[in-house]
Image 1 (cartoon, helix red, strand yellow):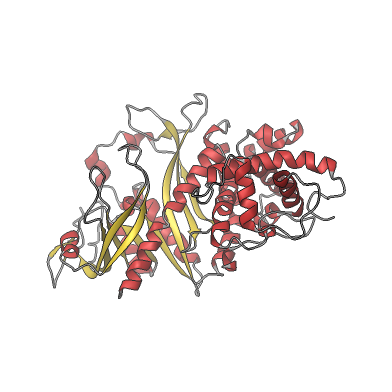
Image 2 (cartoon, helix red, strand yellow; image 1 turned 30 degrees about the vertical axis):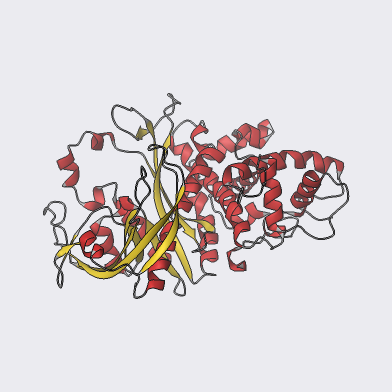
Length: 479
């Protein structure tokens, strides 16, 4: 599936960072150049500190000066990456716009300014709220970030009563993030691509469904509320679906539940679906001056009818406005929802692989462009993890510059001779993962993001020495 692959330029003066930030406009050509150079440097050492990634003191000072500059914002930093992502989206007939929220905890840096609460009053945690939307293909390849929002919670809001919070207009609530992302994505969706916003149960807000119905945006969400439905069958969603006969059986992978000490497992589930008409919820005039309309949606019930003992049974109710008229449609929508976990992996890379919560900058203002830059790096590591699973036979040059794959080959095989042909992306990623501790035994499956980001950093450290002993190899890959 070559349309999911992102080839790098073979021009010695152009690398992936040049291409990903092509057209960046920070208000000064020197700032533009510095941003591209910093992206390239930090991407080679994502786990390390900024001084580690920059090597020299002059470059380190330039990096901190970049994040300090008032002209440099997260929006400007991400704009060219968003444009590249939409270019990749246009190559596909269907793309999932996966939304989710994560909290960045900076409580361990007491002197950091402009932070807000990210937990309960008892926890007393301070940090930033981040809401991301990623473009993911139905087979699981991340195409990049589509939208990112960063904010600090208002202290006055934390002191509101539950009733006061509930009676605010939706535009004033934090949950409006789901609607804002849905609208932004829909406005930029190309005509020839079906883009579907995929969200978890937190997004089950009736106003989001209304906005999608009004604008024509596509969505697939997991229901958190058992809403009322109207004629021809006045009932609740769950009971109405439960009365349907199962239309299919399916095996799905269930992730581990650490809090409940439940290991990852495979679950046998039944699938039921039908078209229903949701009754609009009542809202106070203060929170919603105009009554909300009733809406027709497609509902899918995914249920584990005979779960093993001592595990939490699987039960999902999925709501969508993308037609579900047959078993094939229902199974496809379930596969789409299963790809929602890709954004969880992205957050893991950003937090653990890029150590974004350990970037010690003065305040929220300076953190924002730093988070944006590392979000691009985290995406690339995430992409590298999944791309070799889709078509492992493709040449590794889709992801590695020539000096990188030649150095990787020498390091992995311990051979001074050059290979007779370019290694595949599947082989190259295995080698990178082995540098990070992957054993590659039978039954180990595909390497995960942790061993890949560890191996990637070790590779970049080794390449410096490899280039010393191979001076005939130019830095960007020309011989």
